[in-house]
Image 1: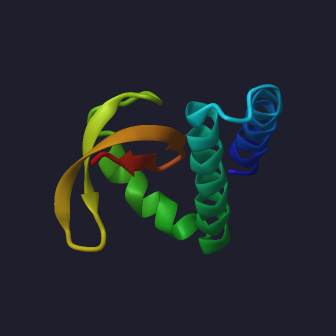
Image 2: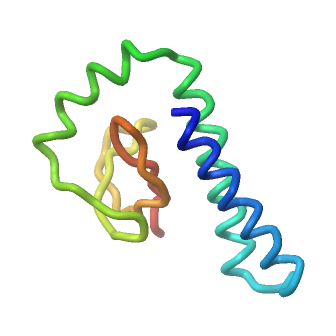
Length: 101
């Protein structure tokens, strides 16, 4: 998980450099916000320990594999409903998504 955090931080540095060259680009600004959120969530996930990730790994193999940027549907934990989403990052035991609409 630490390797993923390092990778996300490197990506964030690249996005920050792009923002420095084009500070009004809304795509770069959104990507920065998404990466910051992914870093925070990954750090929280790492802090919870390996026990929860082992449980989740069993279900991952049966699911469809997605890539970053691909659209999907995901359950929102707040209400348990399915919503359209986009994969913004991969995790060892699943995906990080941004809900669309």
